[in-house]
Amino acid sequence: MATLYRKYRPQKFDDVVGQNHIKITLQNELERGEIGHAYLFCGPRGLGKTTLARLFAKAVNCQNRKDGESEPCNKCDSCLGVISSSNIDVIEIDAASHTGVDNVRENIIENARFTPSAVKYKVFIIDEVHMLSISAFNALLKTLEEPPEHAIFILCTTETHKLPQTIISRCQRFDLRKIPADDMVLRLKILVKGEGKKVPDDVLKNVVMYSEGCVRDAESLLGKVLTLGDDITSEQAELVLPRSDFQLVASFVQFLTEKNCVAGVELINKLVEDGVDLRIFTGSLLEFLRKLLLIKVGGDLSGLGVELDDESLKAAKSLAEKLNYESLLSMIELFNEKRDEITKTSIPQLPLEVAVVQICEEVICQKDKDNDFPGSSGVGQGEEGNTGVSGKIKQGLSKMHIKKEKKVKVALAHVKIEKTKINKKVVKVDMASKSDKLKPSAFVDIKKVEEAWPKIVEALLEKNYTLASLLKMSRPLKTKKGVLEVAVRNNFFKSQLDETKNGQIVEDIIAEIIQANVKVIGVITDGFEPISLESEGSLSTPVEPKKIEKPQDIVQDVVGMF
Image 1 (spheres, rainbow, N blue to C red):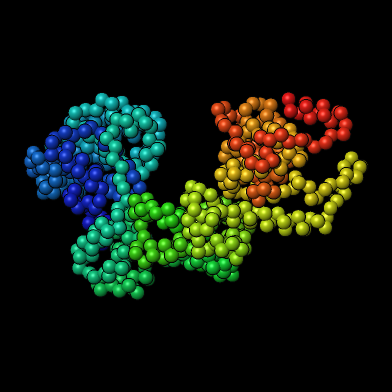
Image 2 (spheres, one colour):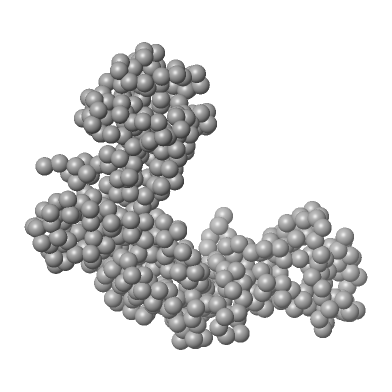
């Protein structure tokens, strides 16, 4: 028994589901007789690239097609030959198994020189064309540049980026798109009716959801469902439908929002017992978190390659309301890191278990302190939440790092000095030195730094008047992954700011004022305006420097300024 996707392969353009932007163009060319010499069909697997190529080859040589028409008759010798794959003037080549230049010369270049036997055009359909070698592409290029009038080349590929630009530029390019869910359901209903069976709509919707817009996958999965009987129920369909990753991932995220650390860890270990690949699960988790992020920003999921049924969309929206932007971004970053760690440890589930504990204990527990997570949309709530998606991100993640820093300082307070022998000398090491600080905070809002800049300069006056003068003539530029870039005017200013001792002083002051650790670096920039320092105690008003007792100290300060 033939599989559904072969048995019901479209034999007319009208039978092709979706891809209207391609069908209309090809049909217009057929109706006007304006046939190109080279076409490129590209897109994901199972969307109909080869089907469209065969339809075009069949229609262009149809012996009963009249002027102004585009559909093949499917009755003439030429059409029947294409349907049965016996038409000697329609040559299909699998480039995956014929990659060499010799194959291109023998099967395409030499063959293209001869006129077709009984029809107008000799059509070459090259599937998976990206698999050809560089020398094979070079050999094919000359034929594409100066093709015989009777030859048409149709190239099909799933990886357009692997094709030389010289090949792409000589073809009419058509990009196939994933099929919308509603169109796919209608297609499956036609197949079910053709088989004389009954399948509930909810089962068809589940099949479409699992196929992710791929027609061939949907038809193959439907074929499995139809083997269960003539009148199939939803319960029977569950026997062959894959387990829903959506439900597993949604449950996992629900546990995280509820701070249910135990349930989250148990779910991970249950997946390991069931033989689930944790990297694949983490990939599904990241895709689900992406869906939640798109829901929060109000994007059209269907227009972004995301298809969800009504029930799943409702569940996703419910979870999205419980998470703010900060929490979603931190979880996406964390699980993206943990996915790479899974294959590097002898205990595959350990990185995900650690992530669960980190999220439940450090990020989500911020709700208990500031009523920010979960339940906050992250926008337009509270004094800090009215700056929008691209505005201020609240300091939950920064608080997490500060909390860790405090724990480390308490632990290290009991071990002030450790003795190590180097070159037979005892060297005192301060275990609680500033160089052992935690990593910088992942998210620091540049606007918050700009607002605090006058206070930062004012605080520096008491510790280093020279640095305060430097920052007065500088400006915070941007923050990225815990690094604060400060705009300075020349190399001298940059060297002063980048000096380890000076940088540490500035970083300590910033951490004290904005409650977030950052690494400060100078960036030479032209044409910027320093931040106005007209607040109380700033350098805009005369401030008497700290009293210096020794004349040589005055000299050192002057040298430092210049």
